[in-house]
Amino acid sequence: MTTTRTVAVTGNESVAEALRQVNPDVSAAYPITPATDIMQRFTAFVSNGVVKTEMILVESEHSAMSACIGASAAGGRVMTATSSQGLALMWEELFIASGLRLPIVMALVNRALSAPINIHGDHSDGMGARDCGWIQLWSENAQEAYDNVIQAFYIAEHMAIRLPVMVCLDGFIISHSIERMEYLDDETVRNFVGDFNLVHPLLDIEHPVSYGPLVLPDYYMEYRRAHADVMSKVRHAVLDAAWDFERMSGRKYGLFESYRLDDAEIGIVVLNSAAGTTKDVIDAFRDRGIKAGLLKPRLFRPFPYEEVGEALKHLKAVCVLDRADAFGASYGPLFMEIASSVVPFKNRPVLINKIYGLGGRDYLPEHAELVLNELVKIEKTGKVKTFKEYIGVRE
Amino acid sequence: MKQKGWKELTPGAVITEPGNSVKFKTGSWRAFRPVWIEDNCIHCLFCWAYCPDMAVRVKDGKRIQFNYDACKGCGICALECPGKKGNKAIVMKEEGKQ
Image (cartoon, rainbow over all chains, first blue to last red; front, side, top):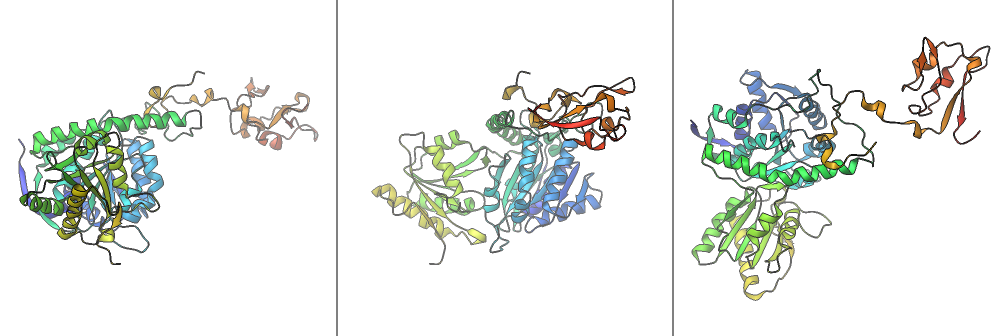
């Protein structure tokens, strides 16, 4: 029987609690703001004997991910956490973890990339790693971060998947702010995650295996094709996990969240914490009779194009808010996914793109109002002033 | 060997058959070929010990002809060969030349 505990905790604390409950075999990490707090709490669990995890303290994130890869290939359930420059330093290992099909779970506390150096919430780290073959789940608040970490183990270790999963939450805005949320009991979490199923563990000396062979032009493309195929199956595993999780917790998850979207004429697409502020402003617009709605992607990699396209195609005008710019590209990274999603439909919404909140710049209700008012105008006139611009920036 | 399609591969390129590198013929990489001159050979087996692959074959304690399917032509055997009275038992010859 599931019992819950209502608590007031930070996002990082909720992630550390989920990791304590999962009790992985191995963790290797290096501290970096704002993710430090997760591993600081987790290493206290290790020191106090609350978990049986083998904690490896390393000298860099490059080594942290390398140690995670080794431990995962050896046959352990493995997790880590990082942010920003830490993720950047892991970059080459990220591709190795996914290419070797190792089900590592990593919390990514989103933070801006240098230079100029900045420690605050921004999605440029996660977006920079979006094509590294990992699964990415994005989280609006502490509750979603906690729930996503628990589901991440289920998805990563699913026998049809076996891929690493990154769980993203906004640095400081979520990682360091205290919120009311609910914890599940330990036994429920452990039953949900289940025992770790071994696939070709290096430590099974009765069945020796080799990891990481050189694969030349005669086979490399076949391995990439196989990776693309397993990515196409991920959304089923994500929905399986969500269904089981909902039966256990009462909290509903999907590939993305739709908020007042079914009969909406204008809409905002935004990731993570800014969705909360946006929903409040949408409610205010609805009170004035304006049919506004929101779509908040949860599974960003692999991106569920078909489902997102279906959910947005009936709208007249949509603004995609990006908390990262893709320098030199036509639009922000989220915008490009949304544009790809609606392309197959003959009648599709007009799309505009705003870059907001870089380096932790506050996203305020008036920013959402500004965007929604612009969408109302586009819906009425059919005219677009500018397709992409920065908002909340000084000229 | 018929090449496999992407659906037949082990996930993560994991090799589950120990020692299957013997099936991989690397002899085609060779630019220089070691030539064994039996008359100069004292069967010290330095070549067998030094060969980084398994290109030197031995039978009943004596070396026999190279396995050219495994030889990449690195030339270590020719370098290490003490020969007989200053005459090498292994010399490197450029492939494609007599």
